[in-house]
Amino acid sequence: MPQEVAQVNKYLTGVSNRITPQGYISEVILPLINVKQTTGTLADYGNSHLRIDTTLTVGKNKYPEVDTRTYATQTYAIEKHGLTDVVTEEDKANVELPFNAEQDTCQELMDKIWLEKEKGLADAITNTANLTQNVTLSGTDQLSDYANSDPLLRFSNARSVIYNAVGKAPNAAIMSWDVWNKIRYHPDLLDNLGFKHNRAGGLKQQELANSMDVERLIIGEAVYNSAKQGQPDVIAPVWGKHIVFAVLPKAAAKRQISLGYRLQQFGKPRRVFKGKVAENNPPNATRIVVDDSYDQIISKAAAGYLIENAIA
Image (cartoon, rainbow, N blue to C red; front, side, top):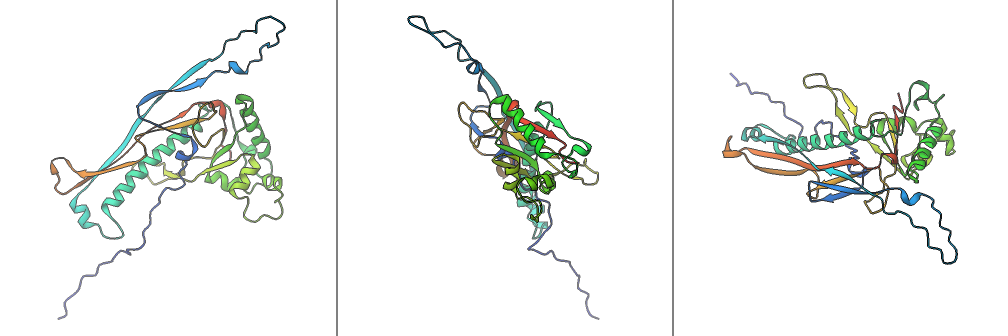
């Protein structure tokens, strides 16, 4: 009698499915400041130098005397973020390609750390309590209503408000992929660049930046699972449905305006550590730790303008 052979469904080793967040922008938006200490202060000049004082003098009269050098400070506080997991020898033995117990665990921890950082910044600069220069759109005013909304007016207002607050026009705009994918087809924006009747595929990223009159258009593509543990997955954009105009220098420097800064401790984000578990219990297991130490501060809220709920 022929012997039966067990049939095993083997994994395809060269391919696998996984939603891997991409298009993170939290580490390209704010100028970077590397710091050693956990706490410190950011220097801030007052605006006394912008006040018009009488400078006229004649003959031997003394020059008018004024008060200068009005200083202020803003405190930063580095916060340490970290996650850890253990990969046992059974995990390593039982997982087959394309899975890899250590690599997969490391990637999961890094994704979680970075997503929290991304969501933290997104929540901060799309919060009307932080960016008090803002407008909330609804109904036909939302830019997804191609027939009735006026994006050029909205963008012009945003630029004017920032300029009148800090004396500098915004050089950057931030939005989610959802917002970009919707407004790049808006007929008013297409018409503004002469593409209304001959532009298949909508505006490219730099073209949309040109229509918004900013140098940089920063598009956040990262998504996260907004469902509670045990509930059906709900995949949502980290950056929501908003647009932020801002003054954002590419590098930190003295005597400049910036919506905010990213203060990074220990040189680089998302450090990975691997080692044996305490007392080798369980035996031959590997503990993986990922950490990040940073602060993301809004240093000049007047250098930003929020268009909340830009699309439906």
